[in-house]
Image (cartoon, rainbow, N blue to C red; front, side):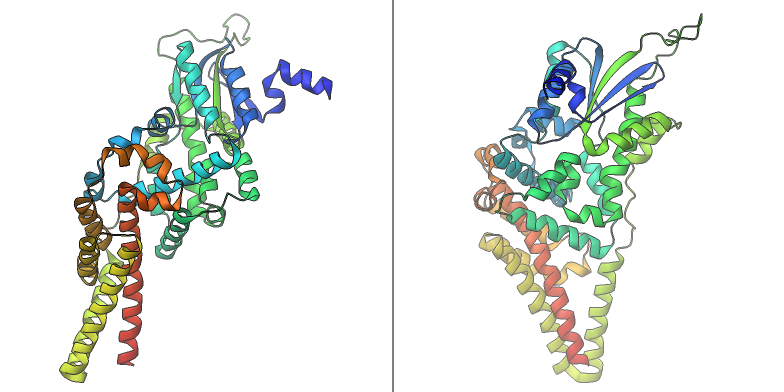
Length: 421
């Protein structure tokens, strides 16, 4: 035991998962960390202070780095712009992930991502280049979303919704999984393992992306002499880079870093591309066509009585669904009314969700204060906080109004089918 302890003290890599890859005159020391481990934080602090490293790379993008270094960064969020541009779901997903990380922090006494924060702080203190090699989390989530079908998206939304209201501590199995995996993958729970599109976007694509970014960041400058000795063919002392990533990325990243031969800029561009939605919203148009055809059939074969009954069934069910969803979110009476009034028309105007309408009214009726933005990071860690904070409650309004409208549509279609049967 003493010998092992001595080895660990002499070399922080001895007790940590790692890999060393040499390529194009650069020696990459890949350190696989657990995002909730004090041992990982200590290993990063020791290694990043070693003078042999000329640069430090971390599994972060600029947005995530800013959130790590500046807990109050959310105060600059433009809520109305997010709602108008249709980014409400993306931001709500990020808040759900933040809530999950908050529960981890409270349970384990370790800030998730503390080892990445330590690496960034050390690089800044030593004046070393800090290479942010991970893909933007928004792009990752959008690519995952695009890879899912309708029911996969509903399941994902339900899972995220459950995460918003989760009160219990994160179970031991999830914590152990996180120690061997990745923060984003663990945040999505078992759904990530069961869904190839989710796993591909969260893990496999990011392995390849980070390898390409490392190659691009550390490519030899054109015109510089080759670092390999021309005299004897021996490898001269390589430029060394410390790469801090979650342990779940270690194997895939090392493999891509050794084997990939494509142009790194091209690879990054490919993995940053999000396939645009079809210009035709087929699901909404199908629902609208079925509903309109049902009304026409009812009036043609059953007269005004049946046709009007079908019409009223549709309007009542969808309005009640959207209104109840908004009410469950603690919405202002005006936002409840707005969500209820727009829900019946949502399939006929798919570009504007009922949740967007009610959330805009909510943000107008109960304008978030500066303090709401300042408290957002802490408030999303608890159920009461989601309702107490006017910013997070606006996102709840959007999410639950949309879910209520969908439930109302399903109920209405079932009732209409029964009356026509």
